[in-house]
Length: 115
Image (cartoon, rainbow, N blue to C red):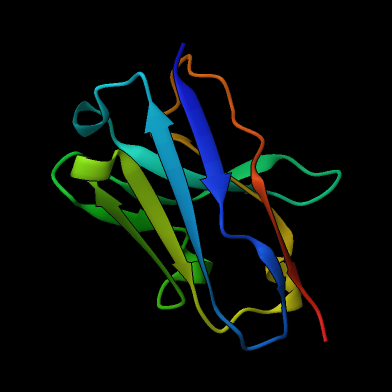
């Protein structure tokens, strides 16, 4: 069974940065587009950034310039660099394929932006 393990979240002050990581196992990682999704408590889970198998990236318009997605196929890992964080970025961040398929979600990593 495919496993996705997110890490790197935490508590950060407004204006701060974090780097999230997602390690995938039991998947031919290089054959999948990957995405980062986030879910604010009580709301739906939204795609915020995606990276294709060729490295092409796409972002939620409102996040362009602050978030950067990247991947390392040798490590089966996708990253999300979060810069200039605001309290509105507070959420649980998940990775999964993009577009979504039938891979179960991991536990996510909590990002809290607060002074």
